[in-house]
Length: 74
Image 1 (cartoon, rainbow, N blue to C red):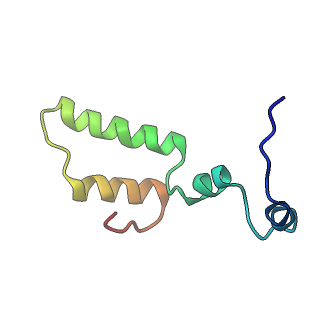
Image 2: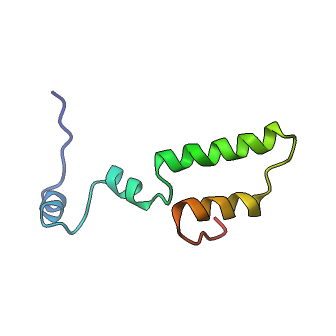
């Protein structure tokens, strides 16, 4: 079994709930879930199939609707 060494203070802060592991942080930071991302890709592919270029404003609006949050420029 391979174990990754974690600094003692990091382990202590994780246990107290002050910080979280990087993978969990990245997952929580994402606006869309995996299923929502698949819906967005399917939406873009449907536009491409119809021969229409996916317009950024429309994609942002669709993503905003499926995640129920207002999205910024990035």
